[in-house]
Image: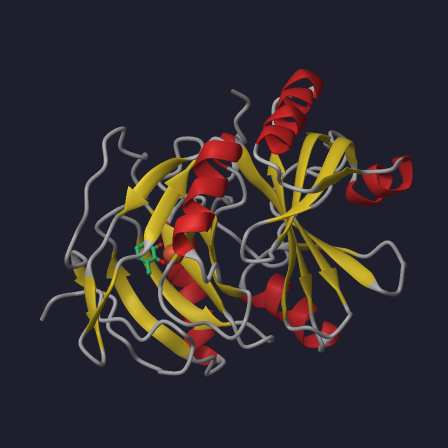
Length: 302
Ligand code: MBD
Ligand code: FE
């Protein structure tokens, strides 16, 4: 079975391009790459041409995700899996592959209607080393763990679980049982495709946007602290304060981006466990500070 190996890139649609350029470079430390196309610019986190395409198309939401496979054979095998599972897909044209800066491309959608690229062969810029948008102590932790993780809207959790595991080849399970207002228990599912604890999660409750958050990881704690100070100094809303998750054991906080969804900034995550476990509380912290960002969960039992 072919398996996706990393969440390689994201496309997002935004209203306020200037605010996004400022946020991505000066708050988070990403590198801006503007190739003068007018309708989009790129954010770099490492030696890839880009990790995020910011389309100035106004959605203020996720547009697409790029899931990587190893090479042409794996892409072919993935096509077979899509056929067998009766998932409609399209082979990307030469122009579409060039647009995404990849060697091979399939285009499809998840059960929840999230646009998915399956690709191999990203464009790597050996002559354009990563240059952060502001000072950094270290770097973003990407490599073979991909860009980070996303929490998405997948209204039919069982269908999404089947799709991401049986068709795309990911592994995982429910990892928390958390009481939510109204007496319900949230049972979010977390899936991995490499040593990152999770590359995707869903089932946190009703969502208006396609995406709740993108988590990006820093290699050194000082960079997490520097980002936190910048967020505080600019009075950017913090949805969930600093704390430590039980599943990936990452030290993180969640704050608003200029599109009104969250970026979770983290450090110190452990590797994915081989065998399923679930938790009823985070380790410490992670208190809800600002409600209304679709993550009003009490992660820490108090
Ligand atoms: C996460 O990264 C997360 O976003 C939530 C809600 C719970 C555990 C880990
Ligand atoms: Fe997260």
